[in-house]
Image (cartoon, rainbow, N blue to C red):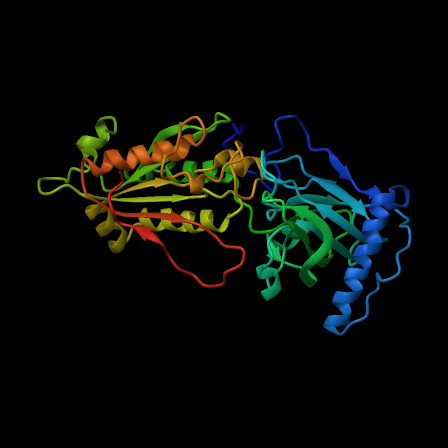
Length: 399
């Protein structure tokens, strides 16, 4: 459960409720037989991949590592890192945690690293990816945040990593239907810009529950923001987090003086037909953080002081749920809720005991449809394999 609403001053500053983050120490494979076998197999995989790419592999011959290991941390909000094996002087095998109460959905990673030497290339192999195709095959690179570089140069999250490759490895996994498949490896090299630094690596730009609460607080911090945005509690999640919905429009003084009520929410100033409704939502899948940044930009556009935003607010009431799967976001899941359910597959018959935010939003849309025309419902997502951009919307009334 995430209770803080303060903005983090740096990535990972909202640590888990159990206390300060503790390092996930890389296991020295010279004393771990299974990890040694993994290292040798991975070296062969690397050599084959390098040969296909027309380069020689420096890791083709495995040797026990020596010297000080990197230190890995994963005890903060939205983190995901399960296990680390050191398999070479500067090479590490990493496994991600699967979504809670599931058998998979490994895609999102987000962790802290300390102890790196400046300018030294470190190789990271994420060995339990599950998707057969990935945008990492088409030029996507991991994200890096350096605390020292941010302080000295003002550079925040940025794409980094060289020799990025994505390929099937030799580790077997069993599908629910009993069929055997292999895991996939995402492998890349990173040279950290400063020694004695604290750095973070992530699949996509992190956007946490704390980030959302900070954005909503900022949105309603001014008098004009308070006049345009009405914050309401939609429901509580399974972990007890507050899922909020926003009503954005040009409100009359009379509407602002009284509590928000659906039957009066769509009244125009003066007279005339009621305003129409637009319903927007995001982050039903926790690892699709780009959806939150689209939502962030849209909220700023809808509350802007320009003619287009004013006209939209005159014609519509925007009903917005910025984050549907808060528990999954806070826990570092990629696709599912704490109950291990893909909430995006539960729209037909959602139960509040399993998917409270979906059930509550669907009920809210039904109530809105009983008062005015629901012109548009749009749910924002990201995709790990497709490069095209598009929108899938449903303008029919909720039922």
